[in-house]
Image 1 (cartoon, rainbow over the protein chains, first blue to last red):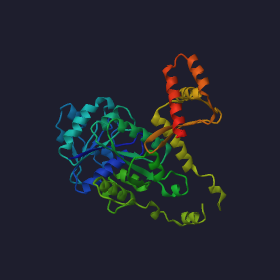
Image 2 (spheres, rainbow over the protein chains, first blue to last red; image 1 turned 180 degrees about the vertical axis):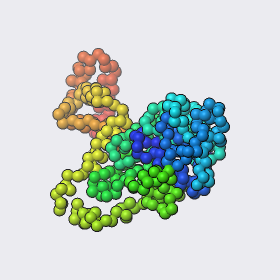
Image 3 (cartoon, rainbow over the protein chains, first blue to last red; image 1 turned 90 degrees about the vertical axis):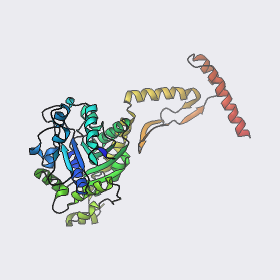
Length: 265
Length: 116
């Protein structure tokens, strides 16, 4: 049976779309068939992060209007066999789709793919309700910041109320040095506050921005960077594998920080 | 602490404690007015039976994992005598008189249990 997973956060700008694109690519790399649904109508970006923006012809709206078949609207990723994208319409707003319609699309896709990943828009209004309508699992993306954690908690409550009970947490943009200096909440702090199981920790890394500039998911890079490895690990954990969490401090050994740590800074 | 300028940077725990509080409130979705009203009502009920030290009492929502709980810490100055209680209850017409008997019965049962 295929799994329909919504990637959501409440707050915008915490890395939902980056997470969706990288997890999709990582799962496809592990020989899974994956359909990504961009549920952010009016502000679609998943096509851009995947580097597929020039190949978008039809969108989910066209499928719903009966102007094309579902298969026609899917954009196939040429780099990875088994990865496809169903783009959102850019010239419409979120009200142009309802939860029933989203559910229909996701369920139809579920027949042909192992994973359906739904990239949820920010907020908790109709766009959010559309995105979660078909999901039976959720990945919550948050960063170790007060606003992101608070919104994540709110979203977890809403998901539970909707009967989505399989919820896992991804803590994104962790800065290990700041945590060490007690300037940032640690992953454990966030876990304690939110009380849902952890499935991934992704460090804050410039390579993420470089990868989005190029429209190439990190996990497709030539050598495996730390964030790429973090995403691959999440994909493996989704598959049920037990993978230890990365030691983010291991790469943080410049002289200054070491000295500071040594002198009890 | 060797470098004093590192001293004022524990914003991590600051963030955590602020979040603990706000998340508990979000989860219970109780606004401050409702919280205050609930506090007053609970106190009214408790005050019929015992004299509460209103200055020392604490009332708070807290959360642990995904459980939110209401914690009331009400220091008791004095326990009221049953005679006072009956009179007070008679005056208050909103209270069912049957409840007095229940109270008496419970107290008797308790003293019986203790004497055994």
